[in-house]
Each structure stands twice: as C-alpha cells, then as structure tokens.
Amino acid sequence: MMTITYPVKNGIYVNMTNRCPCACTFCLRQNGEGIFGSEPLWLEREPTVAEVCESIDAWDWTKYEELVFCGYGEPTERLDDLLSAAKYVKERYDTKIRINTNGLADLIWNEKTAHKLAGLIDTVSVSLNATNREDYNRLVRPKFGPASYDAMLAYTKDCTAYVPNVVMTVVDVVTTPEEQKRCREICESVGAKLRIRPYES
Image 1: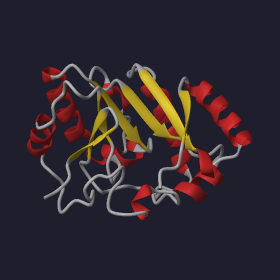
Image 2: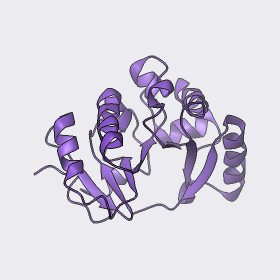
Image 3: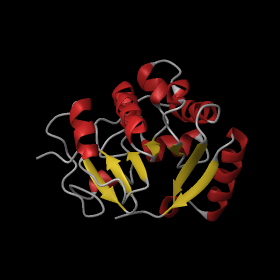
C-alpha cells in the first residue's frame, strides 16, 4: 500500500513523486523510510491524479487546516498533475494549499512556471539553504549545476506576483546566525519571508 497522503500537525501532506533534481546533504530521505511517524514514503510508482484526489478525500477536512504538496521528492517534478489536484481541492474544500519546493521548477521544465500557481496555491515555501552559489551547490548538490541558485531566487521572486504568501527556509543546523541574517536580507530582496526551520531527524 503506497503512502500518497499523510498527516503532519494540522495539515495533510501529499507525496506525489520520489523524483528530485537535488541531493541535499541534510535531506530527510537519508534518515529512514518516512517522517513524523508516517508510513514509508518511497513510492512503488507515481500515483495518478485520480488516486491522489481519492486519497485526499479520505481525510476528515474538518480536522485539518492545510494541504501541503511535500513528500519524498520535489513536487514540481509533476507540476501539471499537482495543479490538477490543487484545483480539485479548491473546488471541494475550504483549505489553504502550500507547496514545499526547492524552487527549481523553471529548470525542471525549461520555462517560467510561477504564473501557473495563480489562484490555486496560497503559499510557496522555497528552500534557500545558503547565502551564495558555492555554498548552495555544496549543500544542495543540484543536477543543474551553478545556474541553480540564481534560478531558485528568480523563481521565488516570480512567485510573489502570483501567490499570496511566499516563504524561504533555511535549516538551523547548517546555517550560522550570520548566514541567517544574510538569508533574511536575500528574502527581503525578492519579496519573501524567511523561516528558520529546525532539522527534523
């Protein structure tokens, strides 16, 4: 039985793919089969949009406040399917929708993609993780190479025109207070908010 959706605090998380263009040194996938007590998140195959929607429908939405596209992979690897599922949810439930992303969708699809989120996504949370290209490449190890850092920043800035709430995150254990201060400045420069998140082992 595949784990397509799973609860975390006040949200339901959607695990649509295990594909990711990054190999972050701190990635939670390195620690085990699942997170936050979930069932294993490694997929036998990618679920169809219909299967994703069926799994979403199985939850009691009076108990949850948010739907989050975030599993053991980069959700924008399946951007069109993600947006189809988001549209389904928006038509049926009064809930906020968030994407947790590495911000490399434009490189994945070789085109600008932020505009596609308009009207469907309430929050985009982008992993910033570093204050410069060199540290980013060392920590995140993106398959797209040196272009990744600037592409991630450009994508985040684009999102601010189409998504009400845009956040950038850094992990506390891999950044110093000085780096976190610089990250806050970077966020302000693109119109996003900074969130320093704890490393979840």
